Length: 83
Image (cartoon, rainbow, N blue to C red):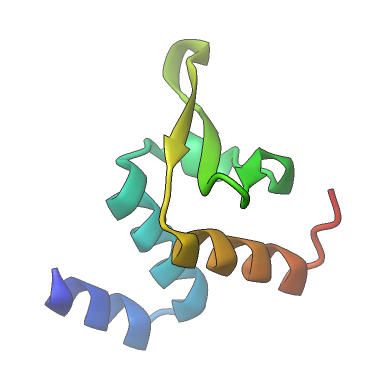
């Protein structure tokens, strides 16, 4: 896993986003649709959880680490997310 993280973090056009997505998938085991549909409103930093909308309309709250919660918030704001 360390080698995969290293390659992702040091290559590609947007290594920061790629690393963040890999961490999200590693911590939550979410599907691609869950990651793509994530909104700032789906992030609960107080309880360190994200709401994931996935296949067949399923929706679930998934715990995440405080570090990932902070990184997702920071990334969203740096890319212009407001809501």
